Length: 432
Ligand code: GUN
Ligand code: ZN
Image (cartoon, rainbow, N blue to C red; front, top):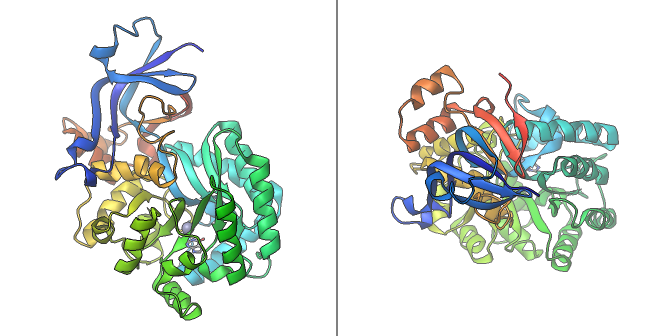
């Protein structure tokens, strides 16, 4: 296929700024006037326009208006909860009972799952998100609906059937049906498009010991599969876990005892963790999807970046819709800054962008494919408009890069996404 080139202002991260010296500057890759050359959806060259323009003079070139960053990667989101956002009144356990479980029961109907999957992926692209690790429901066909829709849009989506044999009536599987459903989905979807499978026990409180043990066995049998679950989100949840598993050293240890903690494990939240858990996360190579908007909405608390960084815990960023209040990982990056500051930690705008892109990619084991817009990676990127609103225009005019990026994170959201590209093709364009 013919080469295509894009000219514009490019920004990405090459590693976690926390590992790149005192100011993290070494982690920043930036071309004020850059050229990105794409062939068959893959980046084949990227650099300063002045350095590359001679070599690619014959290649049709599209100008990208605004600041171009890698497509956002949502490390934890629930597609069935899209229509349950902004449900008033409760913290986690009551919120699940009152709002979420009833909404997920509606997924018994395949047509409902299909409709939500389409709406969900459209919303992701509107917000500049091109890859995600996604919770479905307990119903096997809820994953088929999402995978079919993602395959058609050529998006990178990792998901799996939720395991919850001790969930509420009407939303329960069994050890055997959970295993059979996961195996059937893996057989059906393995190697197709940009899809991946994640074994998804909901959390420690909705699975029996037998189901958690079987999940550990499944994971050991399938080395390409991720483990995706919730960890230490809410104090009442943590108390219930401690009471059900009195022999476990801590919440993480519950999962560990069943073989669920390793380099392919993604834990959402991890707000209330003892140092021991952080040491174990680092040692095992497991990581956390930080979900600041959800944590604020459900009154769960603030993620402790200082503690995670002391132990070198791998981190990505998640919207956690429907507890999350926005699909925008740009805005969520701004909320991560505020969550960090609430515990007297500082998060630079570059580190926040890292979390929403390469950090999530590393957490999901897809950093060889996406997250940094490097040569050899898939050409998923977002064009951000620093003048998307009158206020943003004032705040970003003549501002240095760090200030423009920070203003976009704090004041911006889907309005600031001018275009979203998937595999080098424009998959979303703002019309107004
Ligand atoms: N813990 C168990 N299930 C859920 C869920 O659906 N959302 C959140 N935020 N936490 C959970
Ligand atoms: Zn969640």
